[in-house]
Image 1 (cartoon, one colour):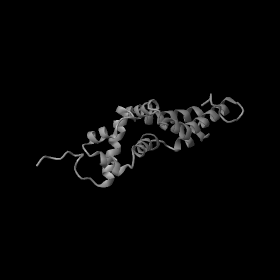
Image 2: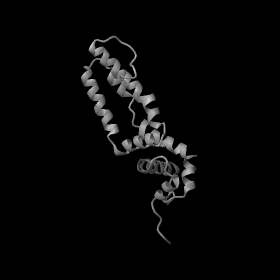
Image 3: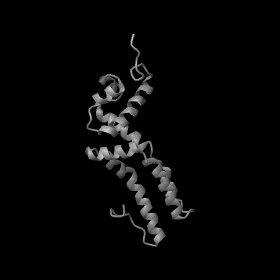
Image 4: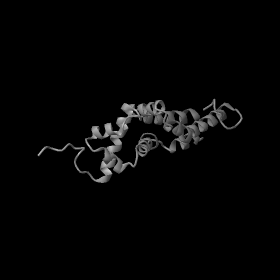
Length: 159
């Protein structure tokens, strides 16, 4: 009887779903979001249908990749750090930039961002609009305050 590969043995559902998602992050980072999920199944050593047992469509799988790569790394405390006026602004910015760099200085993150943009996916645009844009508005407001400029909503050129 041939030995089964780790990918083809029976796994608990949560572990199998995690395995598929982990592989999808690597796969889409390497080949882009236009790549066929059959290649992902082949890489995993599983049937194509198994992927769709856990993710109802390729779009659902891409959305799960988005949540894993972008949203799971987002720290809502960054905004609190930037707003904490008990510390000098330079210190707050340094704390934020170091923490953010720890998140984005990852080849998978960079490749997913680039692949999503090149493939015409709105993942990066959604991330910027929902998460990064509002955070940059906080930075712009704090910089305005530090410079003694009047408070106002950040303009597009400031973001």
